[in-house]
Length: 252
Image (cartoon, rainbow, N blue to C red; front, side, top):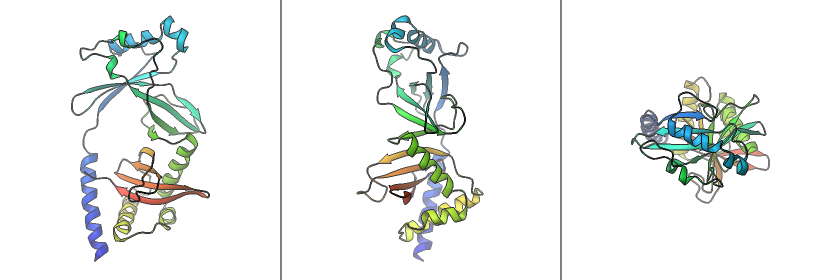
């Protein structure tokens, strides 16, 4: 009965998470520095500034950079600078930094706010992608937001998550050492049911992060892999590899 009650609670969480996932996200466009057509005038002016002789002397060429402009659900416009895509350890990555303050609400680039020596990547976010092929550009939807993980560790975490979501046997092995109470056991069962309903095709990963506090273990640091169906799986990096520590279903 306890397990049945826990399943009901988890089902309620899942319905809330699904409702949240169905909310419209921000509408975004990516503009590349080499583009000529379809680029807003203020972003074209920004690109021209980067390609000026003054900036070239200080920074060299800005080959491969881009700008992402989004309008969120509140109607606010966010403009971000996207660094060029680089590759290391089989992982493509680029950095992103908010630079909305360089543009006015009237659609004008405020050139006086951008000094030639300015660093455009201040406290940047990082987006990564595991691939053996050539790196795509920043507008590729397969990039995953990553925080406080190296390319090599990012690849390990994505591989571990994809593997546990690939077959019932791999799933059972991954969660076999997780000490669980009734609620955790219900979460594991519910996640497994969802994987089976998806024919064991891994859901899309949306973020990979390192946190100083694991979900239900405030004194344990761990790595989290979150997917677009609302689930997060938490891993510990041990001397023999990654080990599942916990799981959580986000809900609102």
